[in-house]
Length: 97
Image (cartoon, rainbow, N blue to C red; front, side, top):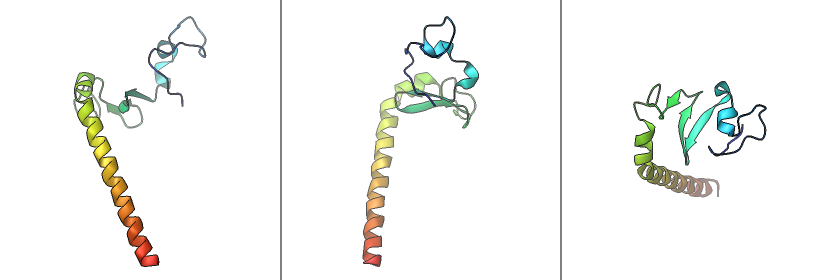
């Protein structure tokens, strides 16, 4: 798996295309991200670029518009999970001594 910026130069795929993203055969693309958010994933059939499949109608313009809210919600969820893990570890320590 190769994660690369959209504007990366092509130095590994034969042919005349200079930009990696355009040199890569479409059937080889597994996922596309916007910043930290996966907006297209072949295996999950997620499409938040054009809004089809499991993108639930959300398109890339909405992803971009709502990115800060999405990021904040993600960080809040991660913090709740972290706090829950600490709570569970404390309970385990109490039980096991």
